[in-house]
Length: 155
Image (cartoon, rainbow, N blue to C red; front, top):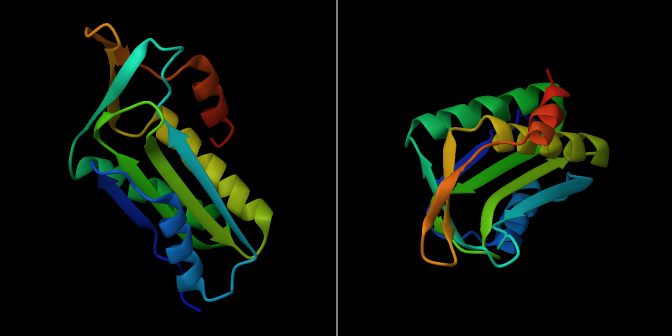
């Protein structure tokens, strides 16, 4: 069997988590023992946030996420890997990011998804700015010390 090719998408439109899982599962034709997904959602921050605006450098963001996806494929025996990250204005409750990993066994799929999310939270070339419920524009959102510590596990 050939090595899996990671799939990376950056898009403005919402993604359909169930459709993405079904696509990965269908492509594997019953070979996977585990499919792990993570969907990151925009929070309303206790009613304070109206939306997040996500900016990226087209081309560069895809290359960087693909590079880390290939690192995940080298670290874990995955059968499939899919990452979708949104850009533009994202409202509370809407998906921002989707990670789908598949492997023969659950540990590899879980660890690879965790690794990918730690990277996406701390080092992916996206910038998030808050749009507040009072109509003003807030600041740029940085990774937290907790996010950085979690990502440090993989160094």
